[in-house]
Length: 92
Image (cartoon, rainbow, N blue to C red; front, side, top):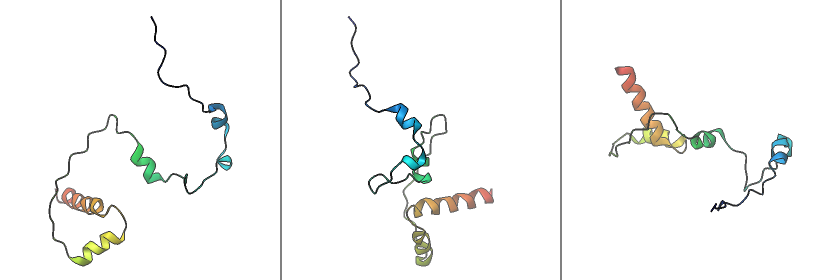
């Protein structure tokens, strides 16, 4: 006895999608253009070394240093980590 697939058949018109040009794509607030940083985050890490877990610490830094990192936007803690890593690797 054979079972049929439980997944529904795609209703996407793939030949039409593949034939579309950039000018045919309508961008909206709900569907904006993808930014490179979002695409990069979405790439699967298959075959790459796993990212080592980070340790949570309490760190005291000068207020102006913290404000400078925060002024650069979201991800300031990641940038601070990158600066510390670069210093570590340069000091080796």
